[in-house]
Length: 194
Image (tube, rainbow, N blue to C red; front, side, top):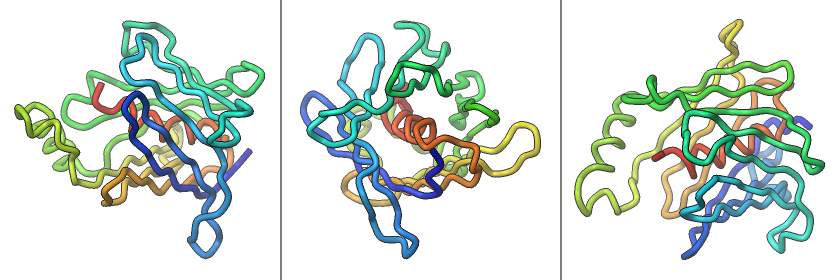
């Protein structure tokens, strides 16, 4: 289930963040809807389900926190039948100045970090300034994941400057299942500040 490029658009509502994952056509334009996800705000144990459409008629995959409180324990990605197809977790020690993640799927073991350390530091300062931290950060940020064994690119997630969050995702490694790449992308938006 390889998808070389797709985009993600976020819609913010009062009780949930909603994400549309859209195929990218060869000419760079938006194609068909690949999946729709909704993340409830303030959930005790994080779980995000992806559906075939925004009416949420058919679940197609999901990710779920392993533990309710231990943020470093990770998240498992499941197919529509509940079978694990990958996992990811934030590396909190490495993430103090620059967010770092681990990503795993069949045949893929990758490490991801924010591309620009200066932007990473500015984001952290921004979040701690009273009142200003509530204003959405206008900066773009990018994450690059590389294969742990050979350093080759696996996945790139680039947030584009816009009023709503919009991301461009490139999957360089054909071994990486779209569902795992999509779950990681939503996590980068939904879980990044945790």
